[in-house]
Length: 324
Image (tube, rainbow, N blue to C red; front, side, top):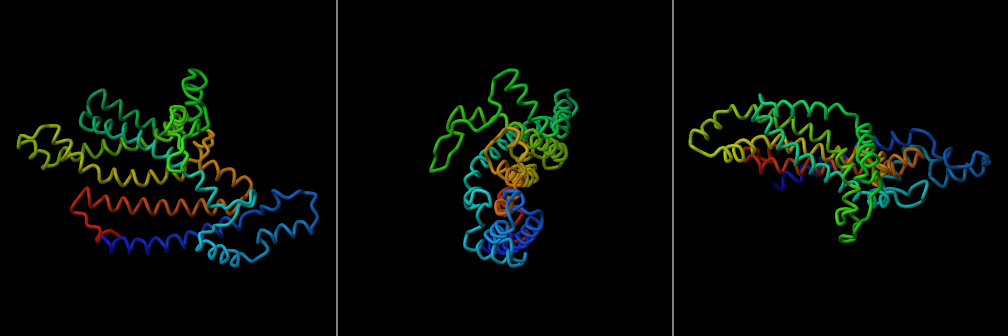
């Protein structure tokens, strides 16, 4: 275990370094933020002063070395617009995105796994075929369109749920969260459902396919021949074996929900990291963009490591030392 974790940490450091170079060069080589937030009537002296103040007068490699040196000290730069630390701005918005992503994944797991299991165990029934067809629809709906339809139906037409914002929040260990109040939960429900639709469809398809494959295996037949109850056969022998690919997908999809909740947060005015990065892109706030992308890389690395460790817990045949 210790050797595996150390090796993965070293690999992760290399990945973060490589991504920092790619992200920094890609972001800082595009556009000129000075042209956006300085007055068009400013003279060349004022223009040069702002350029020097932001450090944009240095060659690109020197800007990166300065950024890398500061990053090693926990400083990812200050926002060009507000002057606040970019890392602090993102961490301030992170709880909103994380709670939305986790809530959406809980919805997807709570609906997708049971429906996929039912569709796999009863593939020829009307219910099984309806679930399979519904999962195809879930794959096909554009994220922004289904978000607008949810607002139109449940907020505008029926008036059951609010159309946007985060609602009332409570303070838990110094972190603001919407999970502690009914108003906060009502504001979270529509964007969480919007995020969960595609993930639910994905889990239905994955669990359904795994169930139909494993249900034909000899060890399932032997378990039934031994007289085990159907609940034990499904709950222990079948479900545990289909959970390995499911855990892999859940890990990757949780990372993607966090990283790509941009559209949902924009449609529902959810004050998370996704909305912050959209606003930053509009004004070319480079430090915030780079800091956001690097934090997303670190989150993906952590999630992948946790998934690898869960492998060994789900299947004793999988050893951490054999994972790369």
